[in-house]
Length: 386
Image 1 (cartoon, rainbow, N blue to C red):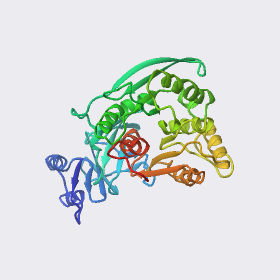
Image 2: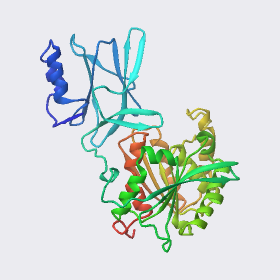
Image 3: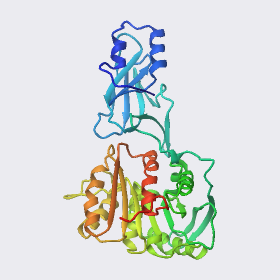
Image 4: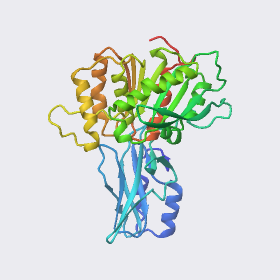
């Protein structure tokens, strides 16, 4: 991917002036500019190949999907230019048609990839987007420890695996706040969360804390307002950890976090056990609701979510002291998340809400961890009175 200074004429348009194009000319163009080509607030996607049709496939609300590319002259080079505002980050793939054959894959001209439980995608970053420096491994940061355990749960009627993060220089003479992370395995694998915690604690942005990473077994069943799941978290997991570890045994020392359906799991657990947790960290939470009727458009998996959110909106209550919320402006959940901010605030809960020019993905959630965790559990560098 190449970032160019904005000019009156886009690079691809200057290339068109040189028609007809031969192979070496196209080779030099791609070698010079890369793909996608970022020029001001314009992104040009390229594909090279002998095909009948090409599209950029994405999940960016506000842009056509699929986004069709057009052949440049009689060459085998295809392109499309679209708006990409400053600070944006977009995940996408390429789809081609050759005769009756369709195929979808990552952009062969773009080496930058993002990974998730669903696989990988190509990444297009606009001018102004930077991966936070606390995401990368820092050899100077003291490393915490991850301990794997199996916890017998009566509520879930099974052994539940968890991974417990202990900060560097863990000291049983101190008391530590507790962070409970839904989709814990995915946060560790796809949001580099152990590295992020090590770095933020080392830099004094976040207070040393204990985190427990909890993976679901049946996510669509256990996360949308599931009583056994909430009972496991509040009545089994947290008490057990409090008994074993030197934790702050007060609500302000406990935070529940989750993204997407995990955000609903965090909120619904707090609703079932009001006052037990002091804070929530909700990232792109699936806060889908209906104001009239029952057609929410999310499919059967969202039925219990909508029922829960509708009921909370009818009788909102302060279940924690503070909520940190974040959502990507390019995802469909942006509207319900924006709508829930005043509902939460009306109860007296303090809400910090942030948006990013990104979508429903793990790198978006990773990039927001610094702001969220430093607000919920501020270290000496971030501790301010508000």
